[in-house]
Image (cartoon, rainbow, N blue to C red; front, side):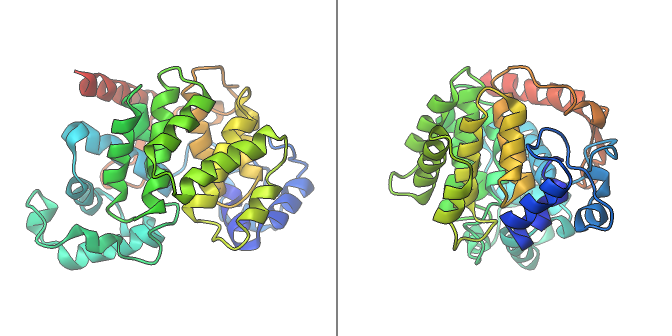
Length: 334
């Protein structure tokens, strides 16, 4: 909700345009929701996510995937398969709310999957076809990974494995590694590990030569040096704003930079650009696992309401989602 109103501005017009908007809105440093300036693309696109207009968490592909992951875990437990994820997509995920790699994978599922597969039969085709797409190293799988870390405290290997099974439906290589990194970090943080320990553990869960390992280290190093996001933008200048690797570096940077302050962590991450709603949500979700205080001005405007666009789901309560997640933790531990 913090990054959503400026997402398209950031991705299409770049960091300078985002910074110019936030400066004009007198919103830097970003420590509250984004104001809507009249007659701007921000005010026209997502007014219900801007400061003073928020009454709930509005539907978004990121939140869809978090709830969907929870539903897969509730139905299948930690042994779910990539085919189980595919069936959940076909039953519950609207085609208009999937993008890039997910959209390509979804189209292939629709083309190849019969009704029998949708409701439980084994696939009559190789699911690896779905991840054979030009966006399979973009950020989509990384934004689907959070819940897999939350539900297995202190077991980052299992968290990464589950995230990898989910990611494999649409992603390969770095696209999978980014998802595994986020899940591993979450598993360490919720078990009282430090942010530094969590990043080190995520690095250990990934292939040593991967670009995601470099991204985690670079993001941390830049944050520890006290620098803003400019070195990351320079390093990844040629990379898509929705690639996994550069955005993972920004997640690492934001977590370390705001290690002692939730508002700094998510505010500076969103203001740093690229995929603003995804990165703000990932950093916020991970930071929140530390159990430290978060100012209520972030959650009060939602009134505990979380809307998704999953089939037959609609609006959920925040307390209900928390209770279901805790039950899932207990179920997986038993």
